[in-house]
Length: 555
Image 1: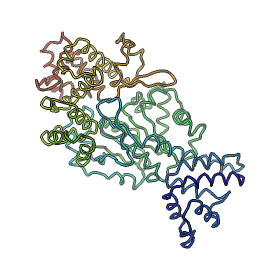
Image 2: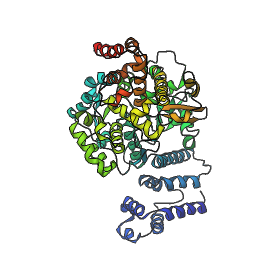
Image 3: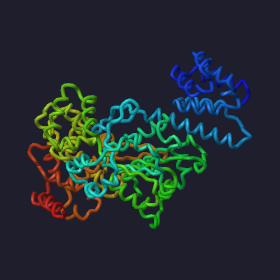
Image 4: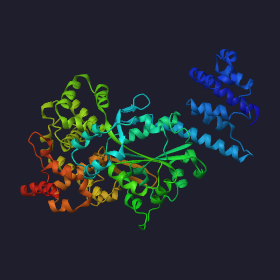
């Protein structure tokens, strides 16, 4: 690097350093600078001048200064430094280190830019609220999953009503968020039911790494969602994977030369999960081998409880492993959520419901459920008709609330909406799409696959958005349900209305829906469930009761 280029870089950095940055850099170099010169540093230009005088910064001596910029979170200046200074370098080691530092800085800046806010899960609102994770992280209850495993495994697989399941968190000793990273593990497995806060936790980890708070020995971290991995089944190795998802950051980058950590979110949504668990099976999808290859690196994998339990069967060789379970909001988290996200005039109502209903309070531990309850209560004019007696009750409220507010967009009463044959047909169609895709393990699906049973999908495609999201890829448009538990609920509604009890019981894919199907059989006149169980006029009342008895009899 010539002197002019070097001075241009220092000028750019000096102009952009904030007062707090100057103080942080002074603290870092305090011993080398000395008290007398520290007092003389009152501006960024004076700081750089003294660093040069002390030979702590120079044309061929800037790596330590770049490291400080990274530690104080000024990755934008680190990136600028390497962009300006980049030129052919005879020393391949120096060049490699420069590329690594630049890539690490770009990654951190990327996460800080795009993941400092997370879309808060409300009941499928098209314009979700952004929550600043730097300022306010949810108070999640995190426990040692090994100690919790035996009791909760059957509950999780069968997706039983959450009251008993969530009450168990009171018996476990919580782990503080900071303690998870006190002793860095090469493998971290994170489990939890749908909507419990796993993605919040992962995004928080990305931000903390970007700000130099955790995983300080990790040079590069790559965050990958299984929903997106499903669309690239032909990717055959990790470098190819990174060139697809992080092409602007690490294009033609050899990952084997660096300390990297991979974060895999949504393991249960991976289409080829069975092939991943059974490596002996003949597999035609190279992406499975890529996920297996990731196990050679530091990695964090998050998914629903049953998926993480099963995944552990192929990760037994790791002694340096921590398995945790996210149990949802603790009591402080619930109270803080209500205080900060609910209109003042509705707070008393919500607090009263949570106090009077043990089931509602148990379900409130799940962030998705709590935000849904708060939204429904806040928007409702008829509080005496709202029922959260069971998880199925809650889903019925979420489903019908969304149809009224965001599909039909009027304030008609629910019974008036259901009386309209076109609305009933819409409900049947959305539930049929959910059922067909769910039983065929299609988390992501194409328009052609929907056309097979919904012929007019093209004409009414926009009506389904909200329940269904559209994903644009280089290969074309694909679709997925906005939330997996809503997909399960819709599939359960279809199964209840159109399948016999025998057909339900023999379908292995419907096992996770059994509790909701049983819940639909409870047609309390004060529950909105009653509007979702008579969609098929040919259903016999005797068959309805058989469904409940068949399911209960199995246990």
